[in-house]
Image 1 (cartoon, rainbow, N blue to C red):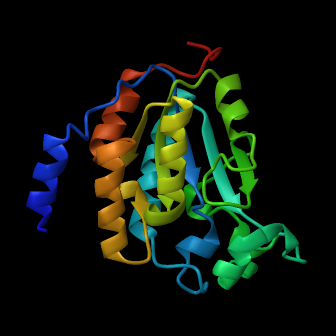
Image 2: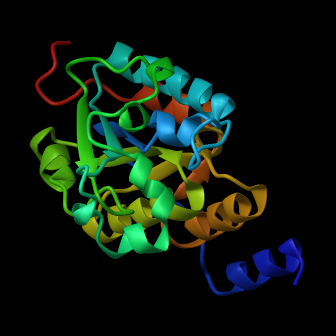
Length: 217
C-alpha cells in the first residue's frame, strides 16, 4: 500500500485529529544521551541535526521559564536492573550509571535546575516519577523530543496520551537509526497519539504561552 493510500485509509477511519494544547507546557527530551547521539557508541547514530533543533527549542523554553525534563537510560554495573531488555538488546550494557554514554548530550546545554530522570525501560513513565514531576509543576501539555522515534519516543507518546497530556512532536527534534522506522512511527504517532508538527510550529506555540506556574511575570 502506498503512503497516499494509507493516509486515505486512516482519514476514512477518522484518525489523526488534532489535540488541544494547554497554556503550561513542558519540554520532555527522551534519551538524547551521548550513547544515542554519538555514532561512536554501538547504540548511537549521528543525530546532530535533531540535537541542534532541540537546542533551539530548549533555549526558547528557557527564555519563557518553562519546565524542561530529560530522561536517560542507565544501568547498574551488574546489569541485573536491565531485566529482559538486556537480553533483547545486549548493547544497552554500555549505558552505565555515571558513565559517559549515559550523560545528556552537552550540546543541549543541560542546566542544574533541569530535571534528569533515569529510566530502565522504553517509556519515560515506566518505573520513574515523571508523572509526579509534570503534575507538581502544573504541566498541561508536552513538547516531546529525543530518540529513538520507533522506540522510546513512541512508547512515551502512547503513555502521554493515556495519562492525559496533549502532546506535540516536532519532527526535526526526534531521530532514529534508520529512516524507514522513523517515518513509519511518525506516521503512526500522528494518527493515534500526538500531533507531529514542524519545529517552527512548535516554536510558535511556545511564543503563545506564559511561564511555568508560579513563575514571575
